[in-house]
Length: 297
Image (cartoon, rainbow, N blue to C red; front, side):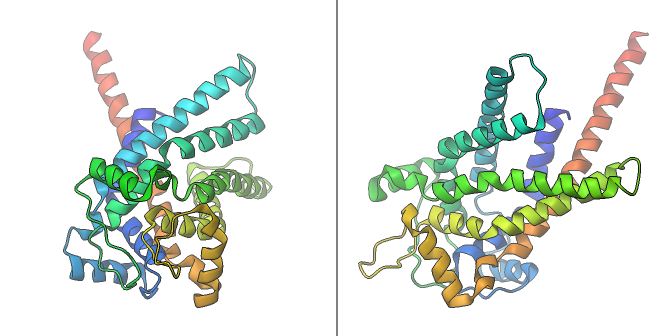
């Protein structure tokens, strides 16, 4: 696939469906917010905080996304070049390299995601009184205040669940291959629509399986809950199991899946829009190239 087209497709999709991510994050972090439908949560946010509130934190998120993609693909291609060395690559090797590149990506870019999570939630009207509000003036000030008040290691809050979530693509790939095999038993060839549907279903399954870890990841990155007698903020990795236990104890298993509807909507719609933008940009590129060639002749 054309990388610039996919990049702009990714940025466009993230921008268009950014409010869905806002709804998902609010439901994950603010445990006292009632788990309503996605559009109801968004309407509440707009009513209480203004029309642009669902897009709060857009620039930090897009910046982090660009950095994260760069780190991942640079690590992936570098590791692949060293390991394969001109030999034919296999699916197994690609999965291993992808996993290692994912780990490198998590370790290097987690501070960016911690900062953008906090900026995205700054100024939110929380239902939970135990959440400590933030007052950052921007990305640089957020880094400065976190290091000053919580220590430099606070920038890596949520690293453990993030490392576990590196398995998400492997789970998606496993279900994708399984569904593809089942379809190929009934037909000789898969259409682009078949591939898209299989990919969307596999992604939805992988997202559902790993969603509790995504919830814990968001809470730890935010790190502004007072949950112990000393009234200290929660932020260490040892609290992962504690958080899972607390959610299940208070709200049942369903408490681990607050915001899943918004996440699944965002996942499927983002994939569809990315394909659409990719096709349009690719067609426009070929049209321009064709016109240039026609002029030369």
